[in-house]
Length: 389
Image (cartoon, rainbow, N blue to C red):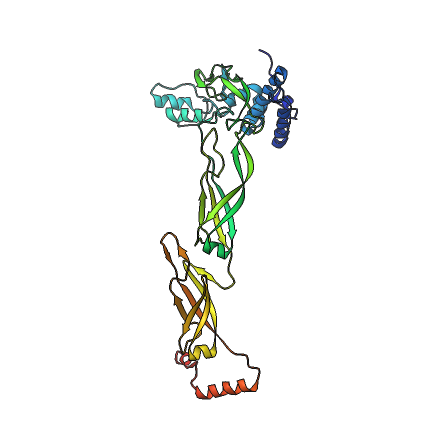
């Protein structure tokens, strides 16, 4: 069997190269030797396969660590191993106490192969098979794409009346080059891990297991990765989404736009887009649930004598009757002048708080009137405070 080329030499990087340098070298070589770029060039195709094989190992931290320690045999053990491959650290049964295992199985003591301890038969196999890492061809069944969360600021009137808004988002979309499958149109090749058999053998002491190839998923064939998405099946794109904001929306409301999250993997459905609203404050209207609150200045004589005054509402102007003797801070309610609750089909109220406004004292006549008012009302307005002491 021909000697396999050093993975670091294949990618043209040093052994101690950081992960980012390895990734950049891989992308540079893929752009140069990809079959889509070199149609009909067998040499370029073979070089591309070697580059892909090298990056499958060096691009994965665990596989790279195994390769650095044990070379190609360690790499094969980390992948599940080819025919006759021996298990490496953390794989197979190298870390289990076979004495304890044989006692639990009722077959007497065997040769101790480690110090993991008291795992039973099922626990041993669970740990054994958990050690296998799938390659790029074993990403499993189609999966739904992830949801996206965005925040959107709108002004007070947009929240009251409802509106249409456009939001620019960045999402993972299906790759146009491969239709989401992750493979290029250059066909398939025999899997380099199982040589097209779809199975690999794993040795654990005197025990041999035939396992589904972790690289091709048992198909025996592997595809070249798509040049555009590097096998992910998805690419990042910016997109404008139109969002309908219903009348009466509140701060913290969460709107859902179906299918505008990230695209699913291997043909799975896309996730959803969730938009959380933030409502800008109004200069004088304040919202409390479906009610609108406002503080309205009232002149002393209007409060004292009573009056009919115009007050602003979200529908325009409305008439409010201020009773004679109205006190500062007193509240009045205008029915059905609040925010529409679309779910209940009802409207809230508007709550008006009176703020009595004193006149400016700029002339002697105004002072005389105030002194006369004081003489006609000699009662102490703070008398109740003293009674509480």
